[in-house]
Length: 394
Ligand SMILES: [Zn+2]
Ligand SMILES: [Zn+2]
Image (cartoon, rainbow, N blue to C red; front, side, top):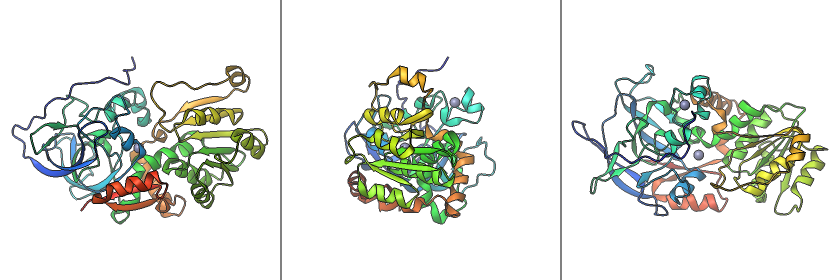
């Protein structure tokens, strides 16, 4: 039976019996809506299936702000978030399966999996049936414990969000999250591949696979939408239509491969505009906004037999409206796609090589901020001044 997505579990107090403690600092969120607060924390020594990582960079994903606001029901506090990371291996558990991994290796971090369900065993770990629990509960998958506690007072802090919680100078991570990075000098731009960039690119390269005879619409030009667009250009999709309310983002979309732009703030009937461009509807559409009205548009703008993919995180418990008769008669499809159906150990290296060949210009999206300027980074993200802010640890 598929486990429930919202299972909650009590946080076990960390056991620190015979372990060698590691003192570090992390951005702790003490309760919903509290600030990301740089605090001293103590880490347990790594367990057999864990790796100690010294973080160099942490990408800020919009989901981190949703989490900090307490808007995902399966999240509890205090917690360290951050789910895009890059850094160096500082110690390796005794039973880590990747025998090539060495202390000192540069690595990128991605999502966690159970490793044993049907999708995990068939090469689709992003669709792990326990994705919500093993990633969003931010505790170890086995005994629900956490490797971190506050230095001041000793309270346990959830520190394995996505199996790794990258908003920390040092983090004890699950080995399944670790992908080697042969290009340490580029970790600042490769670090966000582990969530945002592989989500956008993977939805196009792994799932939709448009050809020159197809049209594809990307709603929302954040880091996910723009990497989806880059991937569509890489596959030479016939029409690549970018939709957003911010003209600067649309202009960037044009530079990165969009063949048509729709400013949805200035266009009263977006789906009609798409219908005109595509002469009868799009083959594919991707929602990167999570907004209910936009999700409805992704389905409405499709040609017969078209497919709409939901990628942005919508609010919990809400409903969308579809005309089921049209949906049936037009043989449309609506699918959810977590993390671009990526298998990170294979797909992240592929995306790094695409960037090096000039086909995945993610360097255009990233800007680095010292951790002390986290508030500026979040402000710039909300203001549309940066697509992907990346925190730098020193
Ligand atoms: Zn699984
Ligand atoms: Zn993310």
